[in-house]
Length: 510
Ligand code: HEM
Image 1 (tube, rainbow, N blue to C red):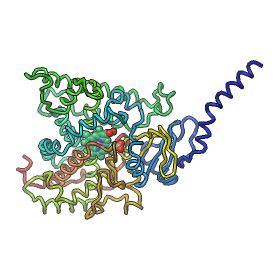
Image 2 (image 1 turned 180 degrees about the vertical axis):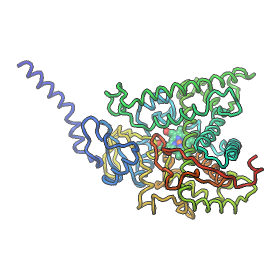
Image 3 (image 1 turned 60 degrees about the vertical axis):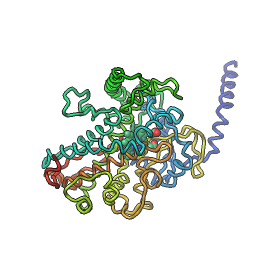
């Protein structure tokens, strides 16, 4: 009898606490979506390319739909209007990031900018990088670095002209050297230096692995009690790559501290030479609003290196691949370059505004191959409504820019690579036009968009100006594989191998 009373009391208590919540949820108008399975939710519907799985589901459930990853609600927005409601009208509400294993294990417990929560720490990092790297003045001051590295790239391609090259390797080296020289003060990937602390293959592996692991859906993030088993092996890989990156970042910081110590001036009078110096000075400062620790310096440095390396290289690789599939685009680009630049010099950054077709190619690449097709996940900080649907606090929100780019009501012939669609029309790619959002929009928009665009435009223009491109002899255009592989960015599944032949006088490559 006592046991029955105890069970009845227990159930009544449970009902008292759970019922109001249940009734509240029952009255809510949640976005449409597939019925979730117990425990896994809708995880079984997500394939190896999640943006494509979401694309297919959105064709059935519409531009706002709700899925469950385990028991976590995830809202996916797939139209310009929905993206605008989220990223413009409710920007602050969705400025949080979810807590994932990737953020914990690969960015020193969310100490970088990308995975840190929206708040004073994030704002401090964002302000520093906008002032120290991405202001118009700073970007101009670093122009010589972009030009020098572009020259190294064309020189290296000239040496291997006529033979097949794995273009991504050269592009990653270029972008890493540019961002490395800005952030670390030197390239750290110098062929001429024997004792370099990082080998090109190591660096390529580390940053590619970092991008993959920051984009994967780790089951333990959504079904926490399965987390300890690390069923997909992702957490182990995160810890491994983080250890390797940490070794490199420790060397970088030690070297910077050494130089600071050896200089004749006091620490407070030392003039910062690069971004790491700026961060170390900030870490020394006891009066800042939010203290920056050594881990924060490493996490943020890594953030900038990763953000600056993979994205532009991936975009240029996709661009040349699309052009090889659509050879008429090479003719249009060469015609423009020969007419405006001529054959006796390289393209400079200031020329880009006079090269509308090159600009149009860059935009078309970012439309058809957005580097981060789902942006970085956002999270709702409180209950709110989008288009009449309830979105609950803690819901993860993804914007599928890949679907928006393929919407026939937004773009004509959306699957075709047609740069002409951007000719004579002023379509912004920096977050003001919600039909094309390669850099996101609002508070969490990519802070590096201007550097990213400069890298794509300058290098693409000179790769097209300096060389004619073809596939290796034994490969036809039909055989060129255009499949994607998924991570935080979406690079080619099979790296592009192509043959470059010089098209300018030989003295220009010297
Ligand atoms: C083609 C070049 C690039 C593309 C397409 C790109 C794209 C993006 C996207 C889509 C986001 C997420 C926006 C969101 O969550 O709403 C992002 C965030 C970010 N990007 Fe970029 N990016 C590029 C270049 C760069 C560069 C050059 C850097 C730095 C050197 C950089 C650093 C970052 C950082 C730190 C964030 C996180 C911002 C935050 O959470 O507040 N990116 N980027």
